[in-house]
Length: 167
Image 1 (cartoon, helix red, strand yellow):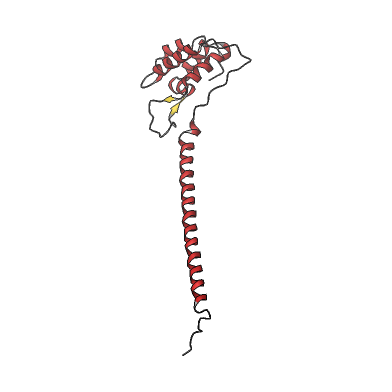
Image 2 (spheres, rainbow, N blue to C red):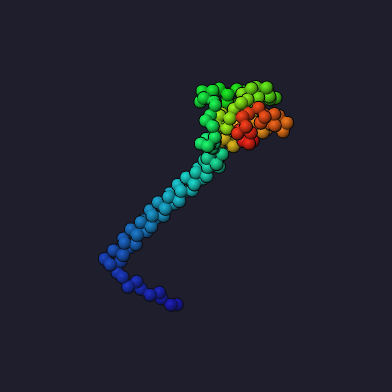
């Protein structure tokens, strides 16, 4: 039988070596745990950030910009809010009240429509089963969803000339 080689370190030297090795092992385990928490935290923040982006930020409401070259808005900010609420009431749910839509948007110019559109924002549609604001619609989506091509043409003719190209 072959004998194994005898440990060359003996006494105090082996004790010091064992303590250093144990201390290094504790540092390695501690560092591994810290790196694990950092990676886990980064993954959680990444998933939360993506969910926020996908369900809210990507589908957020983007205001229309006023056209400085067009005539000034013929709708005051208070009237824009009132007209936006009237339009929403006329289009929400089953059925559409075309007469109220025509009345609210009749004679409105380009910048007036922009004021109403921005006051309308994004609102919940009739069938909204989504998470976040994915199913919410802006004024143009509501109009195009609730009115047929014939009604949209009638609405365009009732609006001021510069606003007819908006939808």
